[in-house]
Each structure stands twice: as structure tokens, then as C-alpha cells.
Length: 382
Image: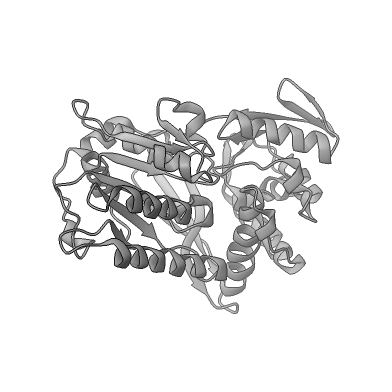
């Protein structure tokens, strides 16, 4: 959007610095886009990013409030970081600029912008699911956060189900007046609307036709070409249903044999500073090794795994060569792997998409094989 229309991208640059290091924003120009970025201090990374964002909000919004850890100190740092970004916006925004804020890291950002006097149109888009009132009620600061979100003019969500949950939460927890998807609260009107995120199918089709994919760069041994490939690609996150898929693969192999397909797992580690993620990463790799050890033969192993990040254009080539793509998320805002896989296919010989019913994509892509990721029979039948 910014490349087409020009504008400023404001965000974290990915770096961490010591708490005594000055936290300055740096500016760079590329194409029509001005990039204004800042590091996070160690405390901000620990309490804002790893803490309140990814150990509190992420599990709660993925309907896993049982895994939620809530710390008042971390929420304080979360608000401080939101305020720091708001102050930078106030410095650089023109009166007629639209401010477009992304994701659960910045639920409080518009509230701080309003406190600084900004009257700009400010929209918010949540890339992940919006959980129901039962999960929000487990969060001690829910009412504070939900009130902060009402400083936006638009709340954008991935699905109709998310839109319905959002409206239900505001009715249940804040008792707000709502009419035609608009929340009325203290002289403010806030539109709640689903805008399912999409892809660029033409660019993906072009990338998928390339021939730069070298299997030996990612796999040892490399997957055999004489059997169909079933590909899965995701970050190693408990929302992705990786272990549930491995259980189904193991059960199917024991019934049908191991030489019928090659399961290719792209499993990128993430948030390894969070204990839950480190443990899951180890469990996934150990589980794959154990299945291969139990059912492999000399000529064939059933599961091939890489923990490397595969460049996007090469991943599209992987998708095109794979007979099946298996998206097994237990909860997902949209899941663009599902859309990208379909866009990457050869129209004369397309593959098959196995898609969890708990993804936003399943609301739009009803022609996929829709499965329940918790039901091993559903998975094996697909």
C-alpha cells in the first residue's frame, strides 16, 4: 500500500539495546516509503514484546487463556512503549494523514495519540483472531484495554466470526451501545468491520514458475521426487497444530505404510526466549526424529524437516511441486499459506489443500478439504 501511494512506515527495527542506551528513531528513504524505526530496550523486549504482547495477549486472543501469563509490570511497559510510539507519530504526522496501526502490540496506541491531541483518522487492523468474551474476562486489564481500543475510528478484523466476537465482547464487558456494526461510546463512533487479508496471486504465480529451489540447501537427506509431497510451512507456535498433524501422520503411516508420501515440514523457530516456544520447538523436532526412526526404511523416510526460513519465492516453488498442502492450525486469524498455496499451483495439475476449520481462510475457502485439527480421524480421512 505504501509503495503504491507513498507514506511513512513506523516500527521496531528488530534490534535490542541496553536499558541505558538512548532509544532514538532513525529515518531511511526507500522507493516512495519513509522508514522510521527504533530499537527496543532489553526491558521493553522482555516485558512489552515477549511478555504482555506474546505471553498474555497472544494466547488470550487465540482462545488459550489457560496459557496466559499476566504481570502488572509488563502491562505498564506495554503502555509505555505504546506511548513512545504515539509521541513519535505526534511529531511526524500531518493533520490530514491517515494513521494505520497494526496488530495486538499496539492496542493502546490510539488512546495515547488522542491524549497528545491528535485528531487524525486512526484505523486499527488485528491480524490474529479476536477471542470471545469468556477469554477476555480472564484478563484483569481487559476493560482498560478495550476502552483504549475505542480511541480508534475503525477496528478491522479478519473474519465475520471475529467481527461478531468483537461486538459481543463490547456488549458484554463494557455494555456499549451498538448499531449496524458501529460502537457508540462517550461521543465516539467506532466502526467494527471484517476485511479479510488477501495476497497478490499474479506475483505468486510468477515466483512459483521459477526454478531456483535447491533441496540440498534445506534438507539432508533430500525429499524423494517419486512420491507425492505433503507440505506444511509455519512458525513453531502452539496455535499451528503441528503436533496434532504429526500424530495423524504417524497413525496413518502405521495403517497404510511409510512409502506413500513424503511429508515436508518447514518449521521456523520463533520467540525462543519464551519458555513455551522453546519447549514446543524441541518437542516438534524430537517427535519428527522419533517417527522417522520408528517407521523409516532404507529407501525412504516419511518426514523431512527444515528449521530454516525459506525465501518467499523459493517457498512458492515448493508449493507448486507439492501434491498437498496441509494447514492444521488450532486457531488462526487468516493463514496466508492456504491462499498462497492455491495461487502457486499449476492450473493444469493443481494440488489439494487440507485446511483447518479454525482458520480465517476456511471461512472463504470452502472448496478445500476442511478438517477438524483435534479429530485424528478427520485428518487421516482427508
